[in-house]
Image 1 (cartoon, rainbow, N blue to C red):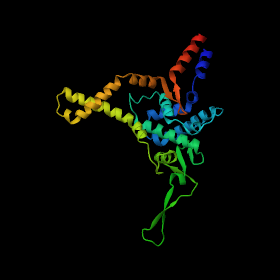
Image 2: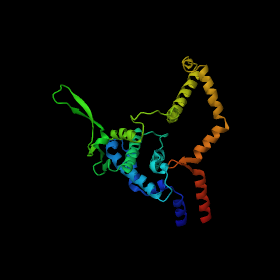
Image 3: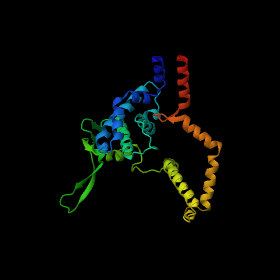
Image 4: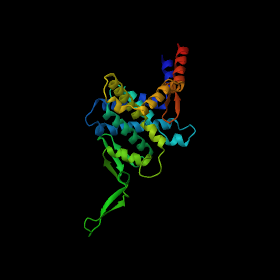
Amino acid sequence: MKKENKTIENTQTPLERFSNENANLKRYLGLALKNTRDIMKLLLPKIAVEVRNLIQSVKNSQIDLTKTDKLEKTINEKAIRERLYDLVNYNRKEEENGAFEIVVYRAIKLGKMLVDSPKEFDVDVKNSKIFVMSKVATPMIEQKLKGQKGGTKKVANTSDELVEVNTGTIDRVYKVKYGGGSGGGSTDKNILIDTKFKSVSSDMFKLLDRAINYSMKKNVKFFDMVDEDVWNNLSNIFTLFNSDAYKDMREFSQNYRVSISGDLENIKDKMEDVVKKSQKIA
């Protein structure tokens, strides 16, 4: 049994290994999932610190690997988020908990910034307080012009002092530090479309279900929703659903996942290896 456990342990990723052994992370996530009152203020800072420890542990485990820009700069938030959900058996399809998801979402972002910019961010775990360097939290401040009625001007904030902030500041600061801020530049339209695919697919299901119900009830509202263009799109979608390409896409989704470094990880091969090793031990 010990050999079997050791075999399974060796097949785990650094993300799985650290999170499985981290009792605090699982406990805080469990509390966040079950509590709906003040979880943002009380538990987010605590979870963020454990996420920081998780990210740092994964980075330390990869310290001997060949370092690339991707490995150094990319921590895949989706992989971490899904791992945190799994720790407390949270399934958003069965019972969506928006408050819990926001806590996890912001805790991951704060945890990442604690790793990447430790001098600019800090957390008082005991009192559940978040601190950000003043010039990072508020880059520009208003300065009153003496002798001028209602006169003010904005000047750059140069203070390195750590100031307490509310949890909402995390989103704004993260957006500026990691992209999507007011730095200008063009945005790839394909990226925007890709990020909307989840919400579009949900809307598609709801609207198609509504159109079907209208048609079954012979409701005239059906024709407000469906015209020839809609039928052309539905026909194309139907063709895709019945294609080999769609089946390949589904298999790809089931057999692979994104690792914390942002690379592809073959789940199927990994599980088959575990089974084979377990059979040899038996």
